[in-house]
Amino acid sequence: MQSVSVAAGKIAKLLKLPMEIVTFKEEFDPIYVYYKNGSDEPIPIYCDKGGEFEMRDVYKSLRNIMFVLSFHPKHSALKQIRKDVMVFS
View (cartoon, rainbow, N blue to C red):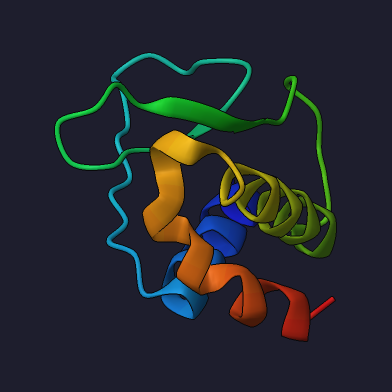
């Protein structure tokens, strides 16, 4: 979970998005990361499938999916982040 938390924190900081980590009493496999825009339903943007992954790989996956999501008409506010996301490619 550490690599996922660190990667999600880095991408949230880069894109100036709020981040919330929700933990449960029970240990869950796999770990999911969601993007939430206001009162809209959360969108799953990453799943670690219960494996161990390097923070760098998780970060790259999150960055890529946020870039793709920025093209969706419903998430046009993310259009502004495209340049920031691609600078670190």
